[in-house]
Length: 70
Image (cartoon, rainbow, N blue to C red; front, side, top):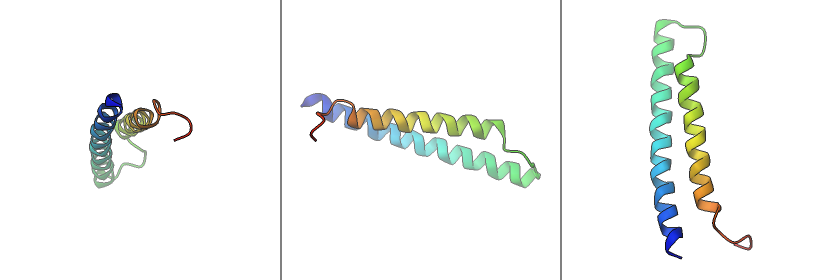
């Protein structure tokens, strides 16, 4: 099925984006710790939420168009 390969390719690209978002979130947390901040930074919360959304999209692309018996 030609669409499946394209979906998998896009899902792989989304995985890479999710990894980048994770790295950015960790950088934000490190800077907050270095500054001595006590609270979780709002920017890190947004980055983590975006990462989860991208991971969900990748998962949906990998599983959404396949027959239930696979």
